[in-house]
Image 1: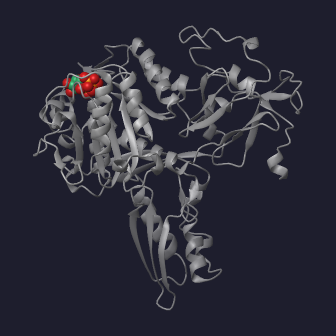
Image 2: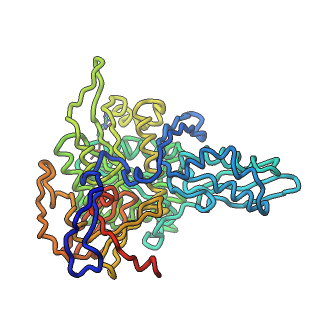
Image 3: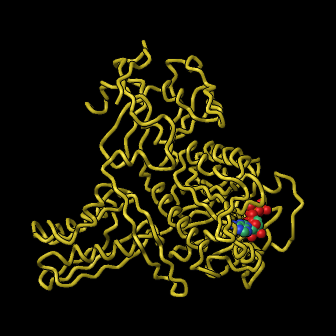
Length: 539
Ligand SMILES: Nc1ncnc2c1ncn2[C@@H]1O[C@H](COP(=O)(O)OP(=O)(O)OP(=O)(O)O)[C@@H](O)[C@H]1O
């Protein structure tokens, strides 16, 4: 660490001394460096989806685990074998050794343990583990470990664990139209221009999630050129109306519910923007979706009024951005991330589609390289998926059977499985609001940052945070030249609003209307204020 003199601030009640981390000010490639600062490690889990016997996919999942996971992987021996209190205490203590790697909290504290029943005389224990999503990629590990730690108790002879998932329930139910009130997570798949493979990603992601055990729907919001009717082949190709309730009944293909203007029997639409928004609104909100764990919205391409209106109708849980590797695409992606930032929707993954192909033993990059990693660097979106050009992807798109169904073991399916795991984890995190808490404390004029999965917290000078903005308005995207000057930011500037963008960044709105995306990685590297006496500590 290097000691620095912080910019003097006559109005601030703290010492003018701070330090800078030895880490560089810019972000490192897509990693959770805020997690690296904790005693963390990564484990590789190989999990098997057991639901769909026709396509037993292997999930090679890289789970970032907090220090607690060390305990979770060493539960075979230890305190759990010693009886210390009531039988219930014993069981809960044993189960509390299992840490959810995504939330960094044990499964008892997470509230996963339900219906605990104990017959100590017979040595019988039964309970249910209610996970946040039926598509949890590590549900088999939870079941196995729960069985193991309870069986290790000296008085236990027989353990029965059943697995279930929380009922489908949206995060902000009150913001939702009636038709959407039984959907847990709504994920937008978006691209900023047409033809980059957005619908391909949306459809294959949806079928991947369904194979992981989730209840899934797809809403094709592209009224001008709906792709869904080409990409899937449901028996019933027309949406039905429920005349009494005046609702729309979705059609279905392989268990995934589908709504598209292309199934409305009216062909391509010639409509103006407001009409389009009206139709989208009607289709989306009056559909009887039923209980869904994930609704995937295939957004119309672009970042115009139609997209904005759509995002305003539905409180999206998260967005996945699809792009191609060209330099020009980066500019489009930046627009997309900013649109979602304005709408407070976290972008959890970027799919760089058609990035390469292999021929004659060589790998070719026909559209160049690097725009995806630049997105990761600039916006701190930690998940980048490279999707190669594959003739089978194109063919399956035209055949009405998604690639992940047609060839579940193929290379493309493997990438979609990784994307599926990412979406499940990120939505769960967002829903549980397990993210770094960043707040503004007006009484000491400091931004307080709580480091995830740890007790560490630190304070930042608001003007310093604003001056460290890495957006195109402040720093030239290609040359790195600093455009925002030190004196452009008033020393006493205060944020108007700070809202989390999922678990990777906050969106800070400043009095001049500027909305800054500040990734937690970056906040970790900014000069900190020291000797702050937090009023909350003494409260
Ligand atoms: N990785 C890939 N390899 C080969 N073909 C692909 C790949 N990704 C997409 N395609 C094909 O490219 C075409 C465009 O894809 P898609 O319709 O998914 O794009 P889109 O962004 O949704 O387009 P639009 O904006 O018109 O809806 C389709 O024929 C699709 O099958």
